[in-house]
Image 1 (cartoon, rainbow, N blue to C red):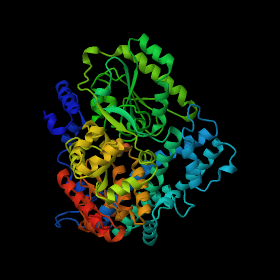
Image 2: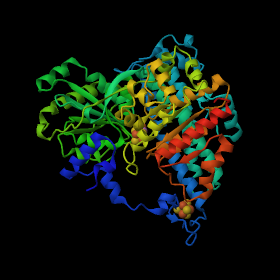
Image 3: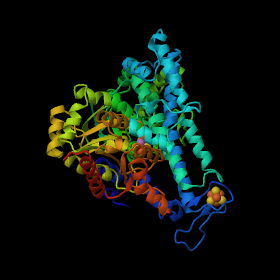
Image 4: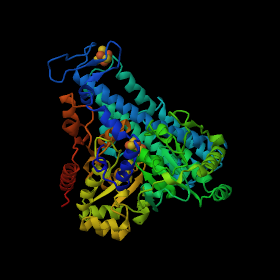
Amino acid sequence: LKEPASRTITEDGRLMLARMAKEGIETAWDRYEAQLPHCGFCELGLSCRNCVMGPCRIDPFGEGAQKGVCGADADIIVARNLCRMIAAGAASHSDHGRDLLEILKAVSEGKAPGYTIRDEAKLRRLAAELGINADDHGDLLSLAGAVAERLEEDFGTRKKAVSFVKRVPEKRLALWQKLNIVPRGIDREVVEMMHRTHMGVDNDWKSLLLHGLRTALADGWGGSMIATEISDVLFGVPKPVESSVNLGVLKKDQVNIVLHGHNPLVSEMIAQASQDESLLELARKKGASGINLAGLCCTGNEILMRRGIPMAGNHLMTELVLATGAVEMMIVDYQCIMPALGDLARCYHTRMISTSEKARFPHMEHREFHPEGARELAYQLVKEAVENFPNRIAERVYIPVEPVKIISGFSVEALLEAMGNSLDPLLDAVKNGLIKGAVGVVGCNNPRIRHDFGHVTLTGRLIANDILVVDTGCAAVAHGKAGLKQLKAAEKAGPGLRKVCETLSIPPVLHVGSCVDNIRILVLAAALANSLGVDISDLPIAAAAPEWYSEKAVAIACYAVASGIYTVLGVTPPIMGSRNIVGLLTSGLKEVVGATFAVESDPERAADLIIAHVNSKRKALGLS
Ligand code: SF4
Ligand code: WCC
Ligand code: FE2
């Protein structure tokens, strides 16, 4: 029985793990340990199963086989494997973006009752940016249809570049043009990557990796950007909002519905239904004092950012939430939903509902959402959750902590508004050294790293050194639980950052959203670079993913670096089998795209790397 404190730094996590161990309920940590030791070939990226002449493995010690059956060496195999991870990550974010466009299209055709254009101003800004003349469209719905169609074209093969490369600073775009890595079509780059990595196609590790960057850029400046922008149109641009986080957001006396996954399409409908007076009345009849929604992972981030719906936890907390015994229903869409959840829920009264045509899970009930019937289905599901309340076994309910308060909702638009609709206050603070720089701390949890330790330690060090932190995804939840998203967290910041936070009434760690919302950081970085007339790689900024696990995180890290942002990974990607590739990614890329990766599992040392990087960029800009 592993000591819970060695697995997580969080109080709710520790208490719940202890309880689950006592009840003999298995978690991701237990399954992780059952997998040890990991396969060394796979960890180094040296195994290939791209065809059935293999699988093949390269001996890292140089004694056994140095080539696969086809003749691929370590460099080719490592590059192909990494590139396929990028393609899968880019595909995931981008397919999520496409689903939003389909809803926007359905709204414009009147085929999605319940959904609407909640942010007309943003739709009009986007239309203008895309060169769509609003005067050609009599009404808003027709304009929405035109925007959806224009962005749907970004997925195809007929364009020279995806629409949002317009936002890329001039120098950066010129660099991409020179390298021939301007993303053309989102699907095109992903498909081309699958093609190139087939046996007998691209066997130059450098050319593979360059297309890897292009594929990642098709995500960052394509699919993810579409996902965020269209979510803002459909559900509103986030504004600062107060909420709370950790297992304590579940309520003993209410019907608890937990929303997990990534796409706000389902959760927004559930949020509407949960306010229905007849359902609230039904809840009271069943003995509950209300209907309480809570989020997990990025679906949680989406509804937290826009509606202030509390957040129950991040990736490694998703099983632990069920073990509270207080969840009437968990509704999932897709991505980062462990297939273990359905089985675990069978120990409790919890109903588990999957909703996406493309995502099914063992021991879940499949209730598919489509735009036409989404509102009715949401109503029905909330009703069934309420009806499940009397089945809760009161003696098994365990909600071990009180929630922690947070402030969320810092879209770029909201940040600008807080600064009087100008970037100047931020630029001035950077110039006069009150703020040394800014870092995006993002990404997942991973049982290889003590849960939330990487995020909280790194971020604590950064803000203490007057570096503003913006966060997304599961990192944001970790920071929230650690109290870093409150105004009083400014006390933990260095004197300069503290002053800025107090002047603007913002916390030192700003929540900018879900994982697709990492593009908000790109948009902000591009705007800062443009107003200084420099490239993104000249800014005193960086990114870090201290506890990443997913293919999506690889795509994000690659588009960050290709956009000129130095990125520190806390978990080693499977590339160590190729000295050439490690060299390129951690140093050679500097000459190519003006930024590199670093791998550092110790968050204290990661902080040192980032602080040194920020200071060197300041010096180059002539700032002290
Ligand atoms: Fe082996 Fe080459 Fe086939 Fe990979 S592609 S499994 S290295 S033969
Ligand atoms: Ni984004 Fe990582 Fe969380 Fe999943 S929800 S676990 S990709 S950070
Ligand atoms: Fe996510």
